[in-house]
Structure formats: C-alpha cells, structure tokens
Image 1 (cartoon, rainbow over the protein chains, first blue to last red):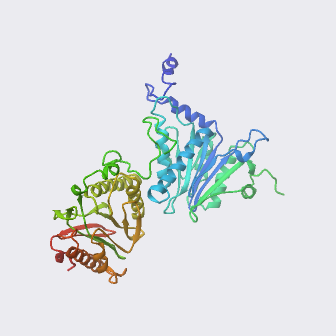
Image 2: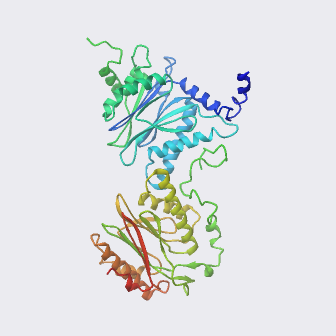
Image 3: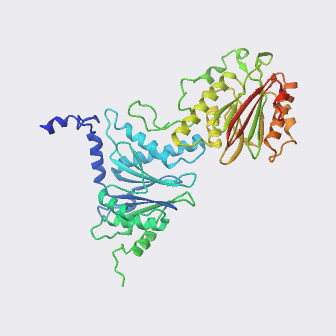
Length: 248
Length: 244
C-alpha cells in the first residue's frame, strides 16, 4: 500500500514525496553507481584524477571511452554515470570557463566553476518535463592563486569540496580505502599512487591494465592539465605492484 | 549565444560576457539605439577633466566639478565625478551624465556580486575587462571614464573609451580638458613619487584645465586609493585640495 501511494512521487517530474524525498534525484544517484569508478586526490602539488575505463569488448577503441575531460588550461573533470549526460555538463563547464575569461580576462576559479555547474544541475531538479543529470563529476584544478582544489557535483546540484573522493560504482569501499590511506601533504607522484591503488580496490585481483585506466593531473607549478600516457601509467603501476606481473 | 538554456525560464544558461548580469533590460538597455535620436543639446555632459595617477603606494584621481549643456552652459557647479565602485577602486564620470551614472551603478553592483560570490574582491584588471565589455557591448553610450585602483598586483590606472577600448598606463587623463592636464603632468610624473606628490600633480593638472577649458571648472574632487581603501573629498577651491 505504501508502495502504491509513493508511486505518484516516483515518476513524471521531480516533486517531493510526503516524507520529503526527491525520488528522481535518488534514482539518478543509482544511475551513477552503475558506472565505473573515478577517483580524485588533492595533493600539496596539484590534483590527480583517475578513471577506470570499462572496456566491454576487445574490439572497442579504448581511447574513445572518455571519462576524463579537460575543461580549461587549469581544470579537468572526471565523470561517473551516464556518459552522454556527462558530455553535456562538460561542455557547459567549458563554455562557463571561457565566459569567465571573456568577461574578466581571468581563468575561472575551481570553486566558481563547480558552483556554476551545480547551479545548472539544480535547475534540472526543479523544472517540469526534464530529468536530473545521471552523472557525478569530480572537478579538479588549480586556482589562479596556485591553490589546488577538488570538488564533486551530485545530481541534486549540491557542490562538495574534498581532499580525496571517489565517484561511481563501488564508491563506499573506495571511500573507505581513501579515508584510511589519505594523508595531507603528499606530493603529486604519491597522489597518483593513491589514486591508482584506490582504483585497484575495485578489481577482484587488485590489478589494473594500464590501457584501461586514465590519469590526468593539474599541478601547481604549471597550472596546466596534463594527461599521463599508458607508458607512464604502466611504470606507476609496476612500482606499486598493481600491474599483475610478478616480480622475480 | 549558448546552446544551454535554463529549463525553468528558457533563458540562456551561460552568461553573456558583454552584458551586466543584473541591470540588463532595466537600467538603460537599448539606450545606444536611441541615443542618436536624442536632442544632444539637452543631454548633460560632464565636459570634464579627470586625471588618474599611479604610484607605488596607491593611486590618486582628481576630477573637476562642472556639468554643461552643449559645452556652452554650466548646468551644475558641484558634480562629484569620481565614485567608489570597488573596495579599492574608483571610476570617473566622463561624457553623458546619464550614461556614466548608469555605468557606475552597474559596475559597482557587479563588483559587489563578484565579491560576495567568490569571497574576495575582483582584481582591477578583471574590473577593467568587465568595464570594457560593458562599454563595447552593453547598454551604455558616450562615456570615457578612468578606472583606478589597487589590488594584489599593485596600483593600476586604466582609461576606457566609448567603444570599449581599455588601456593601462602610469597616468591617464580623459575629458575635454585632457590636453591641458597632460601638459601639466608630462615630465613631472615619477612612478616613485609619494601619494602627496601625486595628489598635488593631479590637482594642478585639473586646475590648469579649469583655467582654459570651458567644459571644466568649479573646483576639484580628489580620490586617494590605497590597499587600505578609498578616500574621496571635494573642494570648491582647488588650492585647498593640495596636500598640506
């Protein structure tokens, strides 16, 4: 009976249920859990974003699965959930970043960008005939003053700031791992290591194929987004013993 | 402009970099389209001499106090032509009084909005870019102000022309008395000069223009801007405005 009563708040549009919930937003969060994980780690020298590519078939071109996106010179985004929804938000973020440059001739702050995006997401929880975005973003970058920042967006349109976070599938256990292992003041390389170790937690054997993971960093020295190639990722993985090869 | 629209209002979800966020459509939108049809003789102009001088310590801005109609009749003898628009920034009124006042109100509210959103004041360079965008694409016409201010990068003086041109300089003058005021400043300026010396130079420049330019006169307003803030004072007698 309870179920039947609640069905009316469950479809069509985002309206409150009698107990104050927005079911469509909650379902959008479920959609994110169906995606593979992405991880963001803030270090003293910059921000690391890492994402697991879900390779469904050996025939797919791996680089066509994009989960990390450059937004501007100094900001990148990791996504989890609906790729198509993520692409809309990524392009919205790119436009906002350029608008800030046109308007003030200044690179946009990471927090400002995160809030522009979450304000946009929020509108899709309060309008008729639309559905919320089924995607979470980890927005990492370096502010114009050199401060590294990491934010998360949620389908409700709430911005959260993190020292380190995981979005997407298996989030609880990855967050547990990060909470145990995160130390402030790490350098960039040890941030990359932590991000890869966290992603490896999702794998049954604790292994990562360097081709199946993307890593992007924004460092405080150059203020630039830099994607690591498979070879570099591979050497990080070998160092961490996460590459599945047995050392003799 | 953007392909992103607000699902609630249908409006553009990405801001227009050339338009004010708050006053678009309220405070004089469409003014430029109708400006040429206006009776230019009836529009109050500042005529004006406004001077901005940057030093290592801060910036000094001096402006005369005359408004005129068609450059032939003094319509007001006590106009304050320099206003604070930022915690450490000022803008001068030059050109059409209505356009300049509207421009000041808009920039002030945009600077306040930026500060409350981002938790820190806008840089003066950011403010000058915004001012140039508004002058070029916004609803303001016939203005030629000076933007002067202090931020983490130091002291800045910018002139903003009616087409949106923004030029940084150590010192700058705008208004009908500019050639007289420049004559006073050329050769006497030194980036290392004290605020008191810069104040005297700025006041003397306005004084010279007031003597010979029919669009300038009736006293001087002086603004001193440092990283501490803005201090503006008016003097009917220009001599009283000189540093003691």
